[in-house]
Length: 451
Image 1: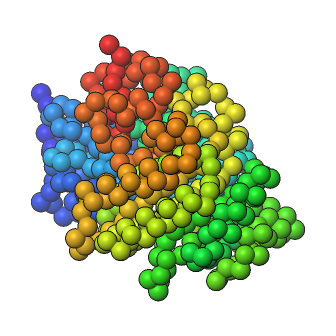
Image 2 (image 1 turned 90 degrees about the horizontal axis):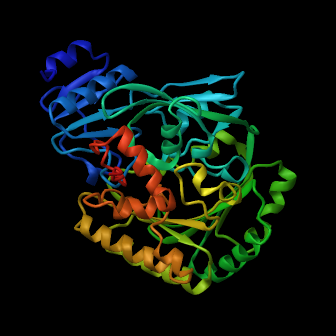
């Protein structure tokens, strides 16, 4: 006999809510992804997650998982199903002796930093890959996962590491939300300086040729502890700018020289100097707090040249004038050499090339005439333009998995899953057949179980 709502509520340590009950909350950072779940299970512990999964399965209801809520594909929402909300499970604990941080599924970067102030847990979207500003020194998030506590499609609670359920341990390091709910991750810690050298230079359109030329030269001698992003964004005054945000995880002597050729271009605003690491790592808070509708798509590039960057700038500026004024383009020039030296088959994460990534974030207010269909069209046009001067392979690539929200929810077939997981897909199918043969977890690049 299927458990009733009252059966769940009687054992649930968090709150299990229907749509007409106080506290019911389906809000997401991207408002366009919100869907009316039949029930919201605000889990307080891993046992709550297990109860919610078993209830949904027994009652034939779809499941969706909401961690931090920063998703633009709709993967963390359900229409008429059970939304398991992990945001109350945001605990972070550090094992000093083992140099491991244990992070619950709802924790965000700021909460991790507060507990690991003298370390850095390379967390960023870890089970989907986890590219970060420190990937050049410590590798990607997926390569720093050492354990997980998970709830499977049957509602079972399992421990996952290199000795326990090693097939699942391999799969979650890049396979994302295909195998269960990650209630807690154990991640390797690395010593981190108290300060990081930051650069913030603001340029206008006429700077683009010189800026791109300087970037080309800088990339020839890039070091693992250095990197930058180049952001096309409208300023507070409504005018378009290109913001250069750089970092050097080093002392001031090294830091002051790192991006001097960029500074010599004469930005209209500039700052460079050492700042606390936790201040730098929380620098995206303003963006992640932006309300409204959003859709992401990623591109991979193996060259950066003036004509292409100018075309991207022109296309982006037109989009901002069409009703999506908060849209941004972010060129990410992290150091990916360490990641690229890890064999593709070592984990499920298959996107191990050392090329730059570019995020196109289409952002528009609910009051705008701009639509979700307009956003999708704009994102795909930008993707094509951004990679147009790169190799044919990169032009056809899906982009970094955690940026590829345009494609992540296209799960009627497994075509997009095959693209994102590449050579690792057959092995992932075998793991899926063992742990989720009925494809319960089907919201994000859903893998088809092996026959």
